[in-house]
Amino acid sequence: MPRILLPIGDATEVLDTMYPIFRLPEDGYEVDVAGPEARLYHGVLHEVPPGADPPWDITQERPGYHIRATIAFRDVRAEDYAGLFLSGGRAPEYLRYDADLLRITRHFFETGKPVCAVCHGIEILTAADCLRGRRVTTVAKCALDAQQGGATYVNEPTVVDGNLVTGRTWHDNTPLLKVFIALLRQSAS
Image 1 (cartoon, rainbow, N blue to C red):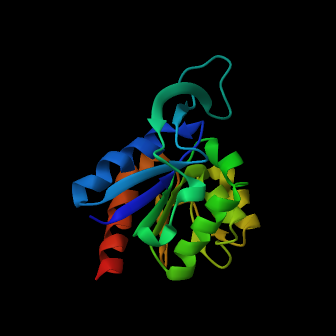
Image 2: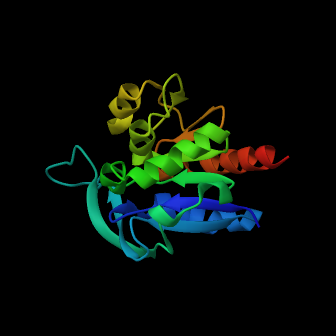
């Protein structure tokens, strides 16, 4: 069964992360969850609270489910994976400093394997210098991160540029995963 690598850390967004963990196996892909260490991580939920007084200008963060990483980044052999899925939340803010994760990320671009990033996952791609000349989408508050990485930002649910598919937020999970799975199948043929 082809394997997909899904990096996480504390404050990974639950819906960004759990949906591909369950959706990809439905199409015959095994998902390996990796982290800075092989351990349990704290997921979070992000949303703008409806009807809040005073209103929120940005998402509120609440505790979510815990997610276990079964392998540490330093132990990942990127060549063993058919694709990479980068979820969002606040985790990418600090994961982007992990040299092993950046090495892993670059491997997927150097080999042309499918990569999917949603929401703040774009921060890892910027840190790995994998966005130059690309057209991408992400959550609006990360548009600057994409542009600073040399990409053109567009506000669309899902954008494909070569081996890279990007989505704005978990609200775009369905079209995002459909396109990512199509890229995985195309890459395998």
